[in-house]
Length: 72
Image (cartoon, rainbow, N blue to C red; front, side, top):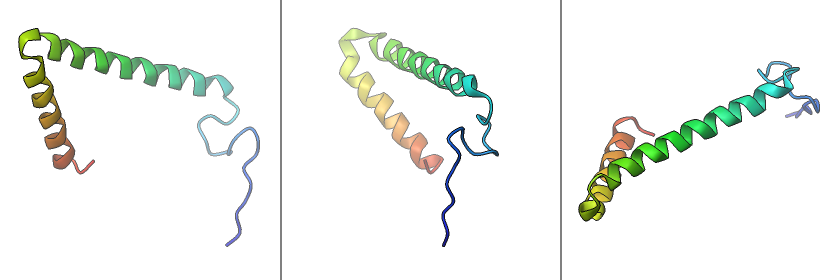
């Protein structure tokens, strides 16, 4: 099998080809979305500080169920 090299500016069929700032923009957008999700989970867990350990377990259980349901 012959492996071809990709040009330094990226593959021609890539959405980033010739659009150098798009990658940085997309990475910034993904980072912001990740931080927003982390804040939402943190707010949920800390809603009742006295039951924080229980809430963490509930969140983890819910994430595991979602993972199984969607085969992620």
